[in-house]
Amino acid sequence: MGKLYVVPTPVGNLEDMTFRAIRILKEAGFILAEDTRTSGILLKHFEIKNVMLSHHKFNEHKTVESVVNKIKAGQTAALISDAGTPGISDPGFLVVRECIRNGIEVECLPGATAFVPALIASGLPADRFCFEGFLPQKKGRTTRLKSLADESRTMIFYESPHRLLKTLIQFAQYVGAERRASVSRELSKLHEETVRGSLSELIEHFTRNDPRGEMVIIIAGINS
Image 1 (cartoon, rainbow, N blue to C red):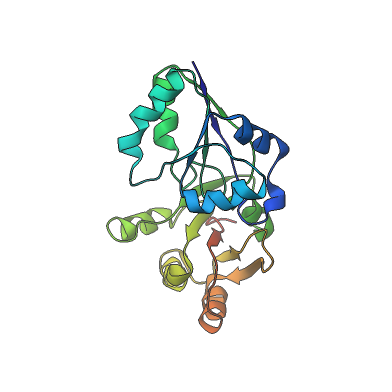
Image 2 (cartoon, rainbow, N blue to C red; image 1 turned 135 degrees about the horizontal axis):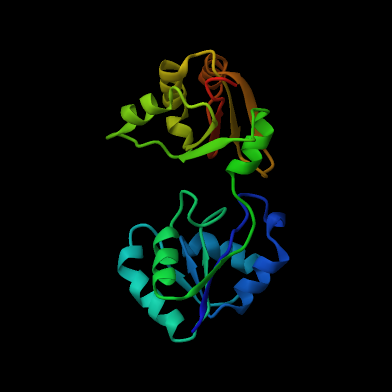
């Protein structure tokens, strides 16, 4: 029987790729990629020529059985996403779960994920935190926001640039405009930036400055 490796890839700077991750990708029988075009750039940079199969949120339910069968037949698979660690707001959970159910060994390599550097750079307490990923866009959004109003741990969210300002305004409405927070963008890239302050100050900043790049929002817990 083969094995499934979960392989983190850089969130921006290609120098964050680990030697071990490169070796595993070169040795794998096939690579499961969220977007083969995006991953193709990474693999070409590191001269990795293994077969890539498309594995994303729109097809994973249809392809997971064949992937499991390939691994059971003796092939080793490596799972990657467009950036960061698969399964963290990216496809990955389903194939990992099915491999475990079928007695296949699963090994996740340590590596890049966007929320850890954003959390540390925020200056907010990092001893206890909760990762919330993307908020629901429509149904359940208000319920989720209300449930977080009394959260005592530091909270972590992902957000796209075109929804950032709306989300910050909603956070201010539900947890208070003076709650401390930070927004990190373009992590590990040339224009990396972390903006810190109260939610009202962040709203003012991003009203004046057009948000660009993928965002990580960090919000202090109620007693921080």
